Length: 620
Image (cartoon, one colour):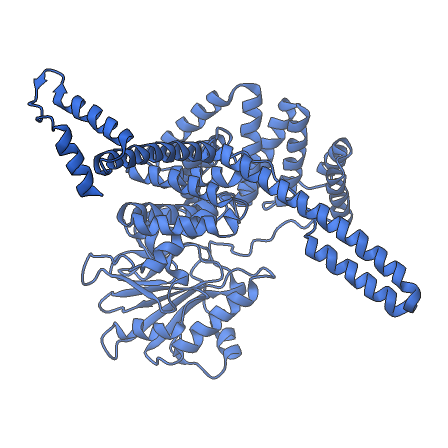
């Protein structure tokens, strides 16, 4: 491995120092922007205000935050602290019904957060503003205003205005319970938050590599490291997005995809998450990448925007000019969502495409186990924000939901199997067997209609689990007393202990303990039996099981009657003729068969008395 033409690889610390001295590919990007740090006294006052909030003393908290506002400078370029104060003030005023002042402070908060690119906190302020408009009855006009802003931004290609409009519309949709629409806006806003979108740049997702001689890029670089290998002669370029799940030895296969002996210029970006919980992962990814590249003498690192040096989360590389810039690749493919899910399915990098050879992009091969796991993951993942609404929608919800939708259409049996496991897992622990059967029956009915979306099926399952579905049996829970056996064991232990400690004097105590224990055990046994019987009766009534039993009993009665009739009929036909009662019934049956309605049937010739006596003797 070379670093700007000089031999490297002596030791990691020396290499890192050498890499840090290289010119940055992003001089205009301040990845480690200095934030305003409040004075100790100011921070203490803010913490006291937060404590007032936790105690429910909102008025004292409001006064504390309003007093703090005047002590924080207004001209700092990255003042997230001031934005948070405005957010807290507006939230309290909104709850108090002071919507006019709340709206003013909410807009101030959004402006500060957007200025400092703290879009996570801006999401909260946008929701507060949407709730204010809802309370004022102006939500519809507020929605139209932002929809017009979105349309204008798309027409004029103003991505800053587009981001502002989408965050507002996403919050409005959340307030209106239009969650699918909200997720679409949040997902798109996450791309916009990372930088200007370059719609000509093809995307490489996490844990994969792509080859191209046209614009190529990746985004959501946090602890990950993006490795770009560029052939300056043929312009062929590889971009690998290495994460903590990646076996970096698979980078050797990336290098091997170029002709032997090809001199490759390398550009590294990433390991930019320097938070306390993520710094170790970032540094480990950097060291593992450098360790592998050190095995390839044809690789010459030209820039390394890694670690503390700072870098953007979205990058685009132009193979024709070798320009590496801060941007977000926007050229999606139909396989994009499935490819986003590969980061923990296999250790080696996924070779997604080679556009220098073919325009084809490989769709990942998912085993039945992978498909079932993805469905279970979709059903069990909380739909609320994990990091932020935008990150959750773009990285988790949208790719998983769309892939699960494909599984539902192509492999319904696997989908059903995953739902059964979900209901039998921790999520469905509170459901009885009968309730699970009802839930599964509803799922099958929904699956039968191809127009039903995965989100509708998921909502039905969630309603069953939460007890909101009308079909769920409403059965009162029962609390059973202690098992009689346990009571008798305790009584016996007391009796034995009394005799062991007191000797003969403990016999009365032992007898009393056994007598009381026996009485309590009998009571508990009877109580448990009655409660169980009551629960089963309520459950049967709620599920309609008692009606089914009644219908089954009626059917059994009818079958029994039919069987008795058949037995009598057989007895009449086959009984010995010496029985006078049977002879009489046979005669009646003979007459009824000889004279049917509307039909003349020739009767048999009556036998003489002597012939009847002869027949009786033969039978005897």
